[in-house]
Length: 534
Image (cartoon, rainbow, N blue to C red):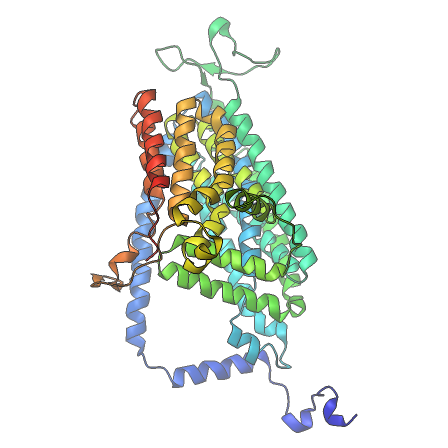
């Protein structure tokens, strides 16, 4: 075998010294600026517009949060006390699980295909090349986590120092979670186990939500709580003329004002920040273990999500994530089908859903939404919260229907009319929607409202999955973002319109007859009309 057939060996004498990552990035930055076609003031106008928009949104949102914080701080009812006690056990697992799943879906460290081809294949240090993307991820998670935690604790009526302490603590925990995803990205085995941990966190968030929703309300009959255990003592303040029992939170408020509980929270936050900083530097040294395949896959996913977001097509966002999942999975074990025509399609749809069981786990975890809203005392909002949560849980299960509705050749190959095919392919997701609604029925509290929620979930998800692709024909509409095709405006609302139509009689507190009749009529029309494909 000649020397040309062997592996290529890098010799600095032939190619020169290997440049540092900083020198390479500086050279690329200089080259881009040399070929730039926009002036500094043009760029400044765009940056100024973004900063002005963020400032206006922050001022408006901050004012609203401050107002809600004052209202929540003055609340002394039993529901407010229970909400403050249980809400952290719901929010923290949800934030951790969401961070794990979102970051593992995109990498978290990602790069474009051009970067993977031209830079990551060179002898330049891979850790140094990926370090800017890694720092961007850590900074984004810390800022977003701080803002989200501060808003949540402010809505709970906590004082300012407690809000800051909780925000620092949760932000540090989310940064540690992001570092765990960087460690998990290095091997597929770690990624699988990290996703399983995220599923357990989602399930853990459901338990306190159910306890909060089903916890018995206090009663002042006989001077004791109805359903309270013997020996359970608490201070009740009869603050309302109707004799309603309230929880005496004055001692808690006074204690919080003196800062008795805040030093512990601040100490935990400072300790978490120190641990997060140490882990950040340790994980930065292991970036060289990331493979080019995983890094480029995240960059391709971000590019696909940006394209789907620009077309305002929510279904396409799910398709991009689903496509990446199946490309990484590679292959599955084939199974023999059963039945004929419609029965065969139903059986295959059931097997297709079982091949990605994590979506069912996420759907079960979304039961936390109606139970948390019911536990917070907002019973009027429980049906609409359950409807939107069930829509998010069921809609990913209809990928097969969306593929069939956007592929005329596939419909012809299946040998069925598209209207019949839509009914058949909605059987399994419809049954799952019914089961989900039955499990949420204790929080909804009414059989007719539960039927309306189930009907709205099925009708809305099927409408969105079987909708036509965005239309770019016709005259353009002028907007501050430029010219936009009018067909794009209907994309985000598709599916949610039928969901709200089915929930309308519940929200308007109509009679049970209308609560049952209107959703049934919407379902009948939905499956009787043939979907448009052109």
